[in-house]
Image 1 (spheres, rainbow, N blue to C red):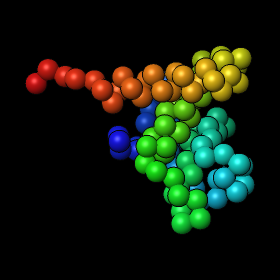
Image 2: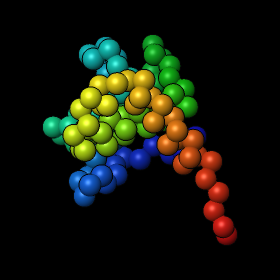
Image 3: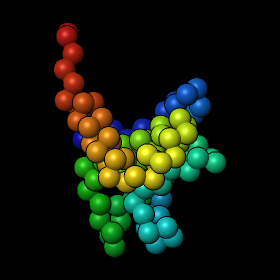
Length: 102
């Protein structure tokens, strides 16, 4: 599993990545892209709601795709959760399996 960043830059803007204990309780989601505040919120694993590291990483990539689509004004694609999932899984696979010349 890749490390989860605390922030990254997208189109010259800092995007913060925050963990929340009550995201599922408040929003019924394990991840959220907040375009007004340029932040991705992820549900942290708790005793009551255990989430494995692989699922947290998948959720991060899903929310990153939402952020990319939102910043590019692709509203129709951004609402297509199946498309977002497929793109996120594809990007994640490329990043996690990339090999580099030493």
